[in-house]
Length: 262
Image 1 (cartoon, rainbow, N blue to C red):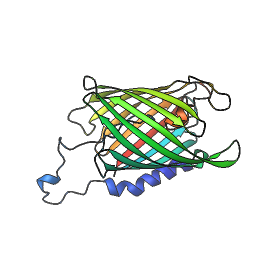
Image 2: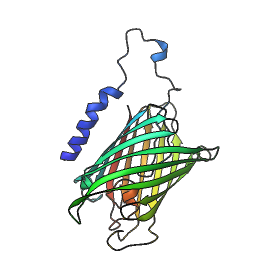
Image 3: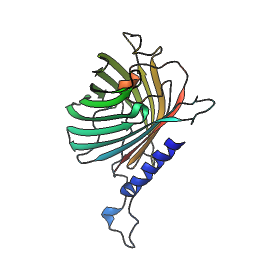
Image 4: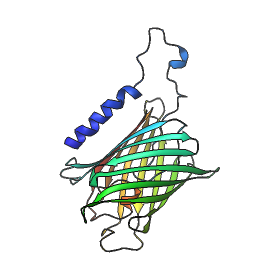
């Protein structure tokens, strides 16, 4: 519960920055919201998608992965992640995250190298520092990640593929996902997305990978400057680097993402 309150406090701190100003007695036409106003598209649950934002956008991410069982104790304890991403230019982004699980800090950069008529691609390098509970010491290394997806097929279906190399465990990992978007007309909700992700383990290693392959699925909602994702997963971890190591079992846990364009 303390972690939930921390996340809500963090959200409340930034809400004034993203809230729309109260309309003046005679608002100028250009200040009125219209159907042409760009909205913030939902990405995936954990998988990364190439940059979809504009230069100088700042993106705040609040993520919870609850450790209680989905059926009996869905909001019992949680792993919390807070992140900020800054879009430097159409091709470059900077990001930083804090996760309370193992007291992890990370900072990284991404390069949007491919934007064709069919496929988008991006490379990210992230340095991370966390407390390795096995040796009771802090460990520093880097994660190298390639993210690719098609442009929406039939304007609704988007396949996503991530490949990464974990410098600490010296192993490659992969994640595959699919997003199905449903446009909503005449509503503050612009799109509803059905999302699924799967992380195979091709070369299990004792003491590093878990017993089961990790997977998750959920529903995402696009609104102006906000999106929300509710998910279920057999892992309580966040991010591709941890998800590609697998999950201890097939038991499902509840989670959510709140993403805000500041």
